[in-house]
Each structure stands twice: as C-alpha cells, then as structure tokens.
Length: 167
Image 1: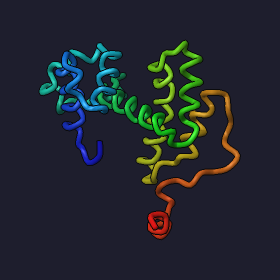
Image 2: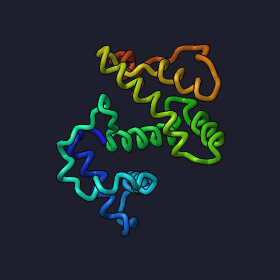
Image 3: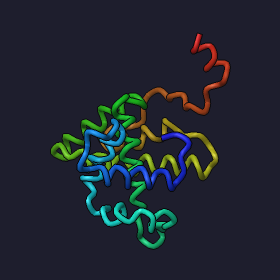
Image 4: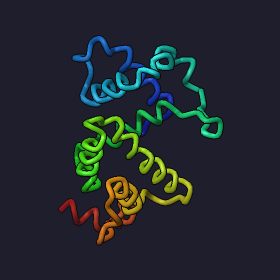
C-alpha cells in the first residue's frame, strides 16, 4: 500500500469488510485484511459507516485508538513476518505466538507497540526507520538483548550501493 492517503486506507478496510461474504473475490492482501477484520469485529460499526469516519480523528490523549492504524500495523507486521524482514522477526513472532498458545493476534499486539514507537521516533526526529532500535525492542519481548552486530538502516544505504547491487 504505497502512495495512499488516510481515506484510501479507510476505504480499503471498509471495502474488504463489505466483501467479506465473497472472500474468493479478494486478492491476497485483502484476504489478510479480512482475517484481521474478523478478529476485530468491534470495528464493524465504523466499517459499515465509513463515510462518517473518513475525517474522524482518534486522539490518544482522549484514550482513543485509531482502528485503521491498528489494522495497518497488523498488516505491516504480517508482511514483515512473511518475508522475515528485518531478519529474525519471524522467529520472534513464532515465539510470541507459542507463548500466547497460538494467538497470533496477541503476539502481534505486543509487537505493534515496538513498531509504533519506532515509527513515532522516526517521525519525531525526522530520521528514517531505525531497524536496530526496532529489533532491540522486539528482541526484548522474547527475553533477548540487543544484537551483537548493528544492521544497516535502509536510509543509510547510499545511492551508489543501490546501483552496484542491481548490476
């Protein structure tokens, strides 16, 4: 989901919810989203009245949680786990799922805090995503410490490195 705005994300989830009775019409990403929506039935009233919620702001300072951010973080974690990127995230996810008796949702809820905090830090300090900090936060969830060797952050890779990689 690149180059999308808030309305696009909200409509995406609402569209998937509307098509929930015809899951064969959904592409792979929509099918993943449907599993999330079925696990979060509390969002149904919002999804069924999406036009009312296109401009709505959920404010953390009022104890509110943005359901679309929540769902998007789930999808992000699932995509990271699927390709094991950053490397090691799949093993952390599996460990947390085991710890929670197979409850992937609970495992991802723990992981989401690390992802959300890492994204917030990148925005606050106007930096790229710090993979090392992210993985350290995730590793702490499964009683592992900081990694022995630092990873290169995507925003630290120089253009010349990217070009030589393609050759």
